[in-house]
Image (cartoon, rainbow over all chains, first blue to last red; front, side, top):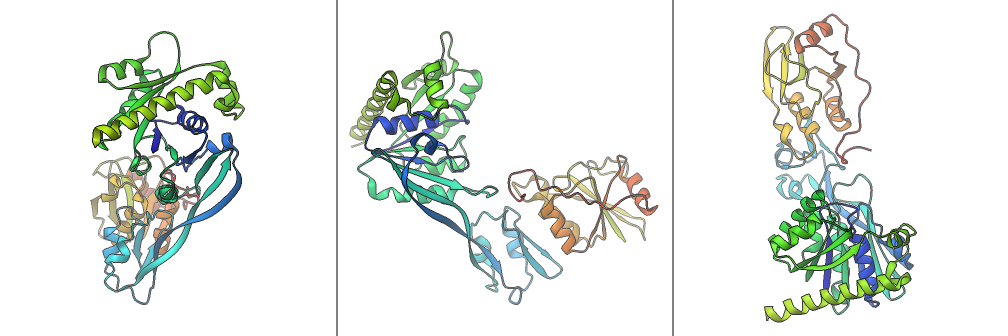
Length: 286
Length: 122
């Protein structure tokens, strides 16, 4: 069972929810796909870390073979190639490693060259297996790292996997939720929060994923995100209070489930609610 | 000698555009024929690497001199490979900047920024 946790912007509580759910599930896998600034490891403090570098293939030009036809320059959507004074220039930092230029080159002047874009760490925290994807600063895309993180877990299908997604609803989030069985959308109780919730709501609908919402930072009074859920008939899975105790635990990089009885219960109930939903989906599909 | 300037409008009286790669048009002025043409900048709407593509177009038009308020490092790499000299514009119209350049009043652009978009810059 793969559960993806996402939100339309950063700081909403994706890491709070996914880390605590993984801890509440006890034997589970936590995958930090927020490769631009992974922070789940700050809470789990994983041990016995194994690290692997992740590379992509970018084009390398053989100037003796290049005929100057410029097909590659015209093809590249990211403008990573320029042809100046009978010489092809490759801008490695701009290249999104689609490989199109290499395929197109009629002279076979372009070949693949490996470039390290980041790394993947695997460690353990109690009985939780913790994966962290780390993209090197300045790299244009974290997708190769996310692919690696999610492929790694294919052989552990029996375990409950929690995917901590990057913020937003762009390609990198689509890659993260692609194989998820269920999506948890985390929302803040503001109008801005509703706007961001709507972005991920539209994404999960587009991907035809079963989903529910966790309302985070709940205060007394009106909650625009709750209103949005009621209007759209979206399942509300849990309400997490805007609370000093939780804030303190979080800012000390503690996992609330492992420190507080109250939060152990809140996340345990959330986990049960999600399991029930996934089970329900599985039976209604068959 | 051909001079290029990023401009906001297709007019000699236009302001110089604050961006090189995302300028809507380029003015190309030929000092010998005193003719000016305006090129649409196809790179303006690029998702990335606009400076590279704009610089490629400038080089393809056999420009010798670029007058611009600022320039990213990738575009600068392309222009330097094409041996195009880059001068910094003053706050005035495109025409005034051409006149100032011909009168030897513009300085070489020596601050190259590292790009704005999280890619291409270090």
